[in-house]
Length: 380
Image: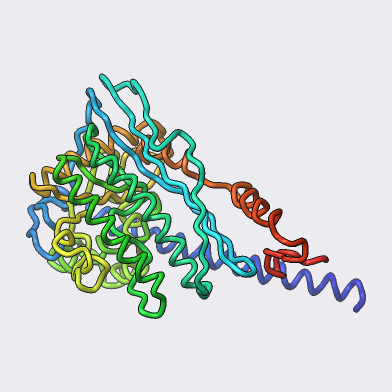
């Protein structure tokens, strides 16, 4: 092929790529415009009195949040780190979880504690059972969640904190029943037991349990809006406007509705608990709720989940929102609670952590025993 033909080929490919990018940009702009239109229409319902059915548990769509003064307050944040690798002969998982307890006095950080330590050593998990790639990833995720929930339960057992904030949901994620693998099913049962133990410990100690989902992709609130609100109120929208909701996640739409210091009504976690892992949490399934809150001007709304411990859903939602708002207002472009930011920074694992542990194993084996898969040790 001549150089002129090659240049023409490259030019055609570049043009095709540019056209594809332009189409994506046009679609994004169009969809955002329609979401913004719906958000503006919904703003007119902020003062409306709603029916508490179909998932909505408060009579107002949007509520203003009072910021917690952080007066003599001890709040705990829990997070974990995970690294995993499939090797020749066995699979390796590294997990690390820790709890950060921050003490605020008169709105100022007065002290910090770390459990079990400020930078705990990662815990290795040797997976001797033969698992396929999908099962291995499920197991790795369960091990990380189990490590986080166990340390959160220990904090709740010891008391001395007013609230525990998890980095993520307060419900087990990315799990289901595993009849094919006894090890997976056993860990799943242990995970469910750990969550129920945490719920029980928090209720007995009067500790607020909540979770901040930093990058939520949920669509539960949009479904509630479609079924229970948009169908009952005349918002002056056309039928075509509603079609965009089929392609819309909660935070994307609520970014056009919520102002700083506002939250949505609390809502039930799921419409039918029997269809979710919640069914295995027994009576706790009906005590789990969520809401969205905007804590800073240049970040999208944050999904917050909480366990209703007996004082009432609206009252608990107000307390949780007030605390999350106060802890998440330190940076205009990042609206996540500071105690979770600190926990995340100390729990995070790096590839070097995994390499050091793998090399330590390799050094004790015969020279011809290669741990790495072929795709990781190509000679060219």
